[in-house]
Length: 176
Image 1 (cartoon, rainbow, N blue to C red):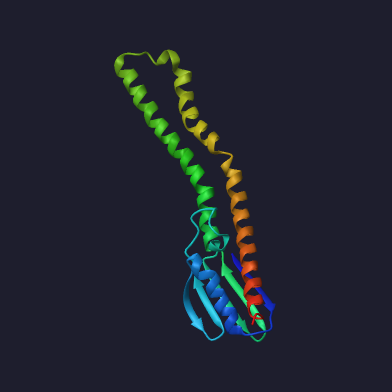
Image 2 (tube, helix red, strand yellow):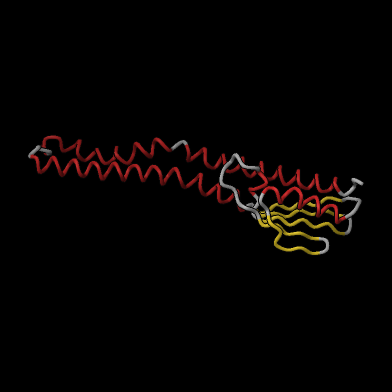
């Protein structure tokens, strides 16, 4: 996914690029390429939804030329968070189910060698694995809906942060 916005400005293009550096570098971005009217930044990534939303962009390019400021960005941090919040709950539920399955298997083996007649409880024995895996998946099932919603919210916040970056660097060009 890509963000692209361009606005007109009047002023010094050098101030635009300087302002972009002053805004992005404290957030952990590093300059990867510098040209006369263009700066490219590489982002540190996003590890939490509580971090500054600008970190949802993995690469940001700021260009100030011919009376226009252009900001182009890749949503790499948002994408990694989206993958995490959609995959982790499923894997957690399956992992807990697998652990419960191993425990159930060990209990059944112990019962078998202890002489406990499992044939009397045969329907329950066959339904137990269904509950062992199904209940953990049921417990994490709200995250199948919350995860994508959280990812959309992170993208919206990152888009707002990039819009704010564009507005701030545009305004910095006119300040004396």
